[in-house]
Every structure is written in C-alpha cells, then in structure tokens.
Image (cartoon, rainbow, N blue to C red; front, top):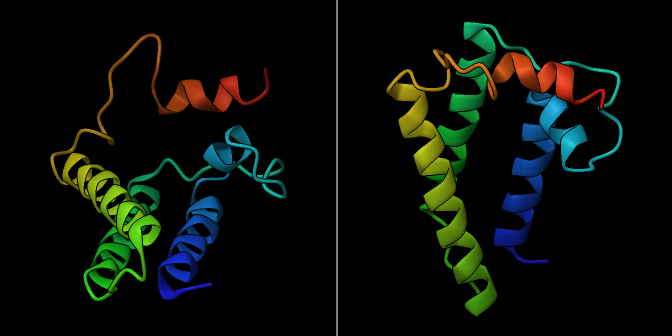
Amino acid sequence: MGRMDDLADRYVDEWAALDPIGATYVGISGYDHDLTDLSPEGYAAQAELERRTLAELATVEPAGEGERVAKEAMQERLGLALERYEAGDVTSQLNVIASALHSVRSIFD
C-alpha cells in the first residue's frame, strides 16, 4: 500500500475510536460496546483529528489516479467537517429528527 492508503486507513482507525456509534453504523466491528463522546472535549478531539489529517494530506503526493481521487475526497470531506466544527454547527444541533442524541438511540435499532 502507498502512503495515501496508509493515511486513509489510520484516519478511519482513529475516527472509529473517537466515534464508536459512527463506526458501528458503517459496519466497523469492535465498537458496538462503546458510545461516542458527545461532550465539547469529544467534538474537539474529532476536530483535532481532522486538522492533523488535513495537514498530513497536504504533504502526500498521490501515486496514481486512485490516490489523487482519494486525497481530494478526504480533503473536501474533512475540510467541510472542520469548517462545521469551527462554526459551532456540530455542537449546537437543534433538530427533532436527526441530532447527536438521536444517533445514540438509533444505533440500537
């Protein structure tokens, strides 16, 4: 595997540990006994992972078309997630249908 693959795999591993509900939801085994930290510190830890990963992505030279697409997709998604965090969007969701608290309940369905 190339450096881009290693970075993407490491991101998923670290993300899953920070967001066990999300990991369980997308089918990553080993996290179904944990809950995501929905405190300000938990959100800050996820934002820090996004910052670190974006910084490392900036140093990666894709080895081919697949890695180029993966890099651009990760930069777009992680950049947007970080922008939402910095705007306070992820920590202040007021929604009766879909919010962080609803994800806790829905993981049991």
